Length: 409
Image (cartoon, rainbow, N blue to C red; front, side, top):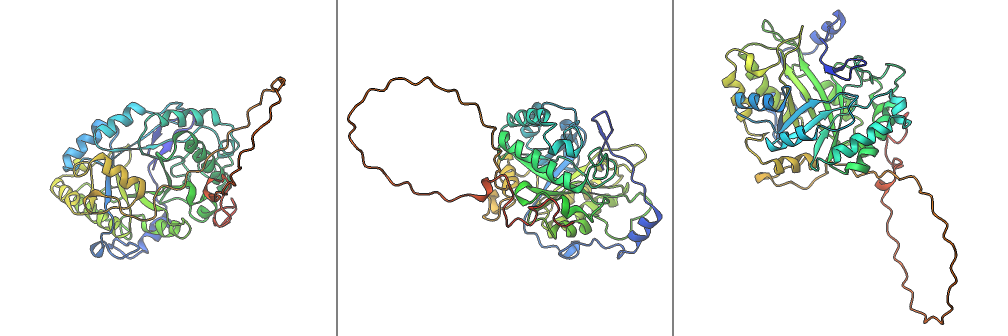
């Protein structure tokens, strides 16, 4: 779970504290079975591959961790502070040179209400213009884990509401579409342990989201397996799928605290469960934080062989197997064919919603005398009316169930 330290714009992961009620609820789920929406992990049917990603703290660390498990990540993920006014384009270029699509968690300053009202537009426009210079597809995670209580933009913090989350997301997405086109792939990211009762109210509509992201961690340690839903995403995935209008999903952050040889088995099962549930990417948080389990793959004794075997299975897309162009095409559409070609299907990229530019003042020209001539009439062509594209209207389509910010309240 990512936390923005208030007033600093930097990120860290806070230790999650389980209450007795939480522990009882977890224990009440069927134990020791990885539950998925399509069945057990062992019975999963591979439809589309899962892109392998890592967040190890830097591109060189991601590359080193990829070498340890013998599969270079197809996604390199990191965090950018909320005070930033320019995109980390050089780092993004380094990620792409290593064969990975950049994934960046960044949110503008200000409350959600200030953002939706345009009071932070100077920063947002500067960031959108800067990101546009990268020129390739990348994942962007604004307001990641907004349904938790440890972010400055969390719903419930400083007056933030589900309705203002709805408005702030749409506002940021529209600005980025105006300046950066379809290259930003917007990932609407929820924390698995956060609130769910009002998520539908905060949903901005499928035209404003490329992927639904879930941050889900297994806090097992070296002495025991956690009971119940080991991979932690199934319950919240089911909730989001009830209103997300068919958007594709990814595990934007995940990992297990197991520090034994079983870590590789956990990874293999998590990948198979993700394939069975149609999850398009799994990004491993490969770092260690104070007062937390060691999430890193390379520190679990005796696990390397099983970790490598897990990532060698069919259905895992990585930079070691596919070109960056193939991975980018898959990211843009979410559909795959043998050989890396993109299959026909509903694209992951929603229709680009243009932001109308403010009217510019028109200079009043001084009338000039016009010579009188006898015109020769030309035949006048009758224009053919063009169909109106509802996706070009910044307002939500009347058929969009999320058209009202109070939908689902």
